[in-house]
Image 1 (tube, one colour):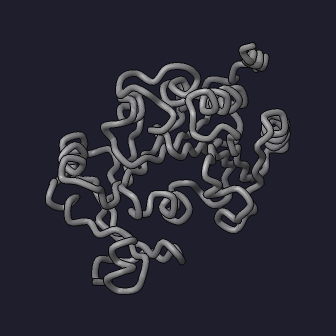
Image 2 (cartoon, one colour; image 1 turned 120 degrees about the vertical axis):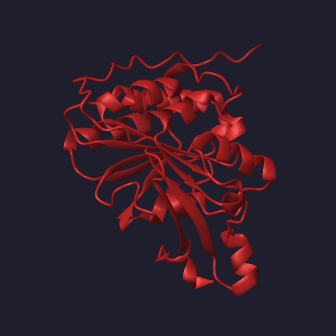
Length: 256
């Protein structure tokens, strides 16, 4: 007998639309060992004293400190809903991770996104929404549907700032790339990946291809230093820097 799917939770819509919020959705893209998750933790695009909720299939955040504050994690859908609603009502800084029992799947992402969407409030503190392993949860490079897509298209006006983490831009829906104004770009796995990024953001493909990953530098100089480009809106608004993935220390390229 086929297992019945659980009924969707009766969740409310976000409130207090506020179009004055800046566009801050952020992408972190790099190959294996490129420093994506470390960038989320250390670069500062997620402010230290902010409210943050993670989609955390590989437990990169749950049970450890994020910028000095313990990140509490749960696999229970009900516990996640209760914890997030309570934390938002308190209005203070918090770090909460949903660890999906089924892993990085479309169903788990949609549940997480639906809950996060429901606590949006354009007049409350901003809620930073970190989604790890996005590409594993979607099956299209076209429009991202459901509440996950809604977070990116409409979340800004409700104070929701989405941070998506993945390895290859070609594998994620165009909704993600088109709605994200800030791109953190680390070392990628191939020239085709570098070319795609260069084309999308008007970057020098040779600079992207020349970025060194934390994995390479750990073997080369014994330190997990990741090089990256931080690209914001505006022509030429690009930073080329490096950081230590273990300590979070930001470096210039003179580390070489």
